Length: 595
Image: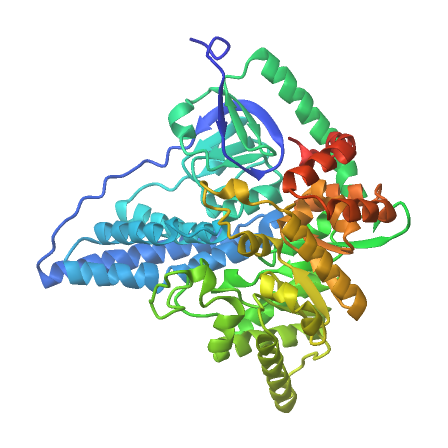
């Protein structure tokens, strides 16, 4: 049966990098190897296995150094990924535990390493936070590379591919993705991975379509199968029909036709029809994403999550390491502002040894965010020192997460003052004139907003957690996720209360949860009085474009109307009736809004 006769198959995954491509499949065979357990009773055998393991680690280190040295210019901003992998070579979770397993269980190095890779996968698989799951992949990628060197397997070299193809693989590491030759590779799909993986981030930098997390693409797809990859919707089509090909070729042409104008227009200010200025900022998790935020027209960074530097490592980062990351981000954005959220762990954001190995029965309600930081004063003050030092290089704002009482914000501010005094005494360059804000993400913070406003310069509404805690919904639980309703009357009334308090007290208010990046909700948030939106960089252009054709006065009337509605469905139905056509028009104009 030929491609043209085969039945069309559609697989659904995660859109890792936007764009549409059509081409023949090229399966990346990493040569799966069988690892056999060997018992090594003799002391000399153990020494030999330890020596083999150390040699494989050294070879892996040399390979990574070579990748760093030869990273193309367009990917230099991602060199930190490979530098992180270098650090992981000596990480206790991987290196130390493998050495212990060899010596304690008297087994060969391959078996010990494979056992620890499996253990690490298991540790992270139950974590709800997708971003943190992806960080575990970094350890696994490093472990797999060491394992390949132990087994004498030839590394995958994507640079050797000479045909115009679409890659199909179980997984691609960041180092493998960095080898992609854009003249040869049209796009790629993988069984594993997600939107926040380093592989996905590098794909977006290369602007190559990618769909990840397909689970069984390598079992379904054969070499030379005709494929359609839709990195916008997260779809892989195998054996497309003629009608499907015509449809997606047209979509691809439309995407490319609008792309340049799409990005160019995103740098225009977000001023409403009736002259109200709105700031649209970016959410980032790593320093290199600052470049994407600028590219997509961000007015600054409204939320810089700082957990990445603390994850999947044996030791907490030093003050100098944190300072360099913050300084580089601020300098890249200057003169735009950067809001740095202090460490938000533990909860489902697991850090090795953060709770001394003690598991919490309900981590979402336990030692996380500001609670953790106030208990771990040395860790917290190290971060505060780094932030204040970086503030000497640009406009930095400090954001304290998970605040639920006045006592917490007072304690955090006292530590900030203490650190400021230390830096002054030590003669270290810093800037104490930083704005201080709190995350409004628990109902308690909503109800004491008036009191909080007296202590801070701005509010940042974290709608993801606010909705979860208000509605008692775990949105990662498939059984109850349908109850996660951003337009729930309780949520809308909370948002209105916050903006009213902010207006009375002269406190700036920004919304930085996923609601901010959903164009359907933009008229509601604008009408409720929100004048700062912070969202994923790629979502900035459609939201800015929509804001420019809305009237703030008209949306205020909309907000007043829906605040009396009894259900989220009533609100959503009205939004579709009133703005559905407008949203469809913007979807036609903007590739990021592709269905």
